[in-house]
Amino acid sequence: MEISTATFDYVRDLVGNQAGIVLEPEKHYLVDSRLMPIARRRGFPSTDALVAHARTSGDAELRNSVIEAMTTNETTFFRDGEPFEALRHEVLPRLIKAREPVKRLQIWCAASSTGQEPYSLAMLLQENFPQLASWDVSILGTDLSEDVLARARNAKYSQLEVNRGLPATLLVKYFEKQGLEWRLKTGAGLRERVRFDKLNLVKPWPPIGTFDLVMLRNVMIYFDVPTKQRIFSQLAGVLRHDGVLFLGSAETTIGIHAGFERETWRKTGFYKQVA
Image 1 (cartoon, rainbow, N blue to C red):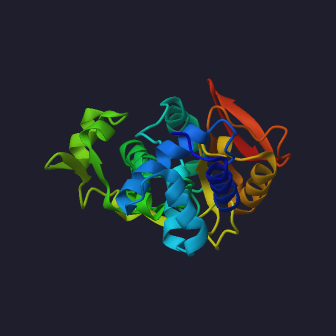
Image 2: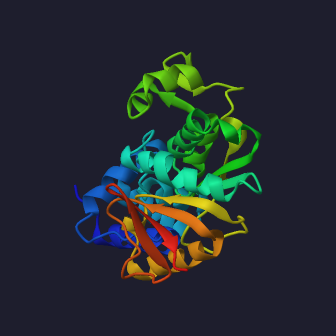
């Protein structure tokens, strides 16, 4: 049975206001499929009953569960491949040369989900740039969901997850088998460079420092134009003047924010601030 219009409208407004996600009118089925598992766990007979309780009970934890369930946490190791080749051959060598005097490199993976992207970057750096061993290198991963952040910090992945993008040589080098899962090894040099914090991109950002590289891939597609404009304006304040921004292949700053210009390496585009 399809959820009611009242249920859909409440969820649409909730995730729009709190997470900046735009739910199109035909997405009733998506709301039902994402929230029905929560309804079952909480003992509600339907999504409508769950949402009715969320609306009237003042249960902040339940509302947060609804928001997190409606966010998309799709991610893989070395996702899409080509951006990581651009990082290895073009972007990182350029940034490393520019940061040689200070020997410090700071990276932010926004909307990092369960951590595959930050750990992929840590492996990329360790495998290809041995000169960074003595540098101060930090990778910050952020997300609005406490559940996925907990998984990212735990760094334990199923066989299916490691099969998606992680080369076998890196799997056996950096991970160890624990039952049916693989966990990042301690002492492998990756955990020391990666940390995870909660951050909601559509809300005011806490002080997070400045960055040489920002990965904001495959999340802006869920926001409306005013939200994208606000996020790009905030990004301009935390990206160093010669820093680099990566977006997803279907995302762009063009026509949204005039403060960035696009560069291309082979078929991969990335962005720098306008000089």
